[in-house]
Length: 69
Image 1 (tube, rainbow, N blue to C red):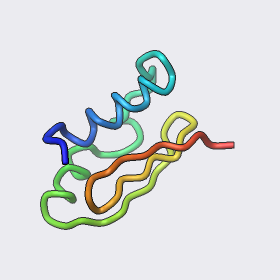
Image 2: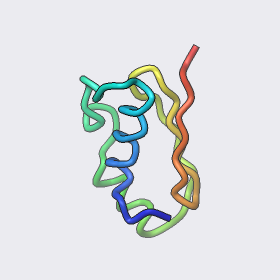
Image 3: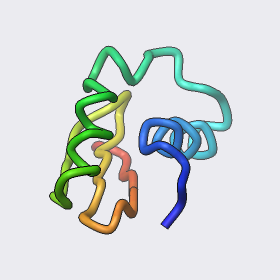
Image 4: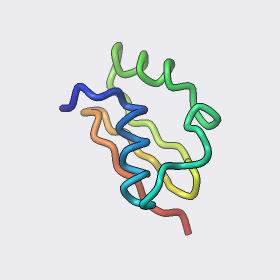
């Protein structure tokens, strides 16, 4: 498990997939502080859409992205 904040990991993964940094801030889609806090106190699976990708954060903080059709 990485010590990198979840929000930074999501941004890095999206940037790698697109070859450039996202132009839409993740803060416009989800509350990053609430997301980090959620994983400090529990281990849910969270899914949300962000700039054409389905982002999934699993209970072990593994993050995957899938392009939306």
